[in-house]
Image (tube, rainbow, N blue to C red; front, side, top):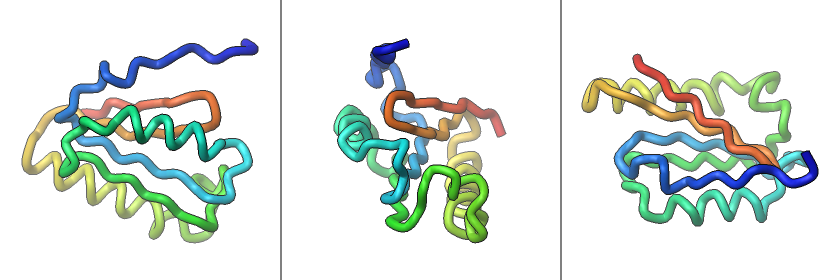
Length: 108
């Protein structure tokens, strides 16, 4: 597909907890696209939105980085556990690359 589909980020309810992580050395994720994504979430409830930027992380580091557990997964799980205890309903984890936003909706 030469042009990716457009995602209407306003379809994500503003009160759904959302954890987004991205890296500064990710050659597959264009910083301008991440900025567009973040701009599209400007009306999201700030207490339910965590944006984690890791300057020295590349694309695969989020999965295979030697410290991915401490840098990415521990904070993401703490975020989900915090919101599960308070809200007890749906959660979203976002993974972004240069043309796609993949959101996982989870029930914990």
